[in-house]
Length: 480
Image 1 (cartoon, rainbow, N blue to C red):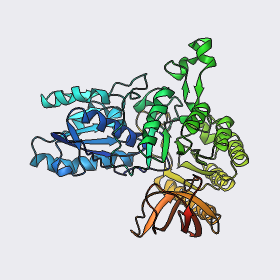
Image 2 (image 1 turned 30 degrees about the horizontal axis):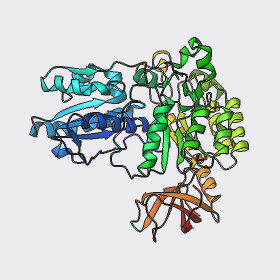
Image 3 (image 1 turned 90 degrees about the horizontal axis):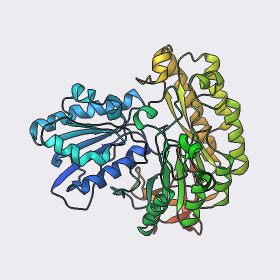
């Protein structure tokens, strides 16, 4: 999954539950939002096996790391954590350690050989097998399941909303990816693209609304490819009956269904792929006030030559045309990006193309990385990683510097105006202030006064940094 706007490699989610069991499980999640959502599915499955989740690793009977393979740094973070857990295991002979997610899928049985502290290896589509795997672990037998599925897999499981603020939640709508970008390991670790039954999606969101949640994020490696026709993989759509094809639900239609079903709930989605985002999605976003006016739209490079080598199935001009449509249909829409510096064969001219594309869009914010070769990808097999590290670092720093300037430009446009903000939590910098986001996904902090988490509040913006708006609340908002 491409980098998304609300989670970071290395960010840790420690799960806790109120349901009592006779065993404790400690879960850490790394990488994309999908991993965090999957950890809630894992917590639900284990709850049925008598496990309660804990925030304290010292009293855990089972430690699970839900891993990311998108970059080498993310994998190294996991290996470093396993070194730490090795000491814990020496002091607690009954402690078991499992590795979940994309890194587990990529390394498979090899993980048990490389990291002998690991007792269990479970891929993203195999979490329903956790009860059986725990039996294997208890019997000191090899416990590995990394079989990728062709089905949605978890649509029938109600995730346990762990450590939640009770305001925002993730709802998975697709799994896997068919795009085969040459730099990306996701198709190999999460399998083919498949969509979830819209009925189960609407039911899950309805339950969240009844529990008082105010905002949901529809999740997928590529949400714009969502397609439900009662069948399986998207590639088999041509085999569907004529009636199935006529009644099929695409992402624009799903977005409309969710918006109409929950008019008092904010709706976000991530991640989009430029080649799959249709103008119809933009029109649906414009038609419903409760659909947030924000799109994470990864581009990866501004050079047509590099885009082709990446197997990005869009050109620079097609991407710019999409941006033009966003600006036309959604004038106040926030836009963020992913960008890779130093992809194999990238020249200075290619790099300048990236900078000029950024100047054209002036993104609100972005996620920027130096190229990291991932084993098993087409780029690793076919392209030499020939850009020196110092060149990668210099180009990345130039991209970051330019983005910081654009971010400051965007946030300064808010000053003097009033925006609806959903309060999510206390500010990290001051316990006397709330933190929330605008519909454009820009963070806002303001004095707490008499407001509470979950309130929609109108905030007048008085000043701004490149990442944060600072203001004062003027009252509860009548809009969302």
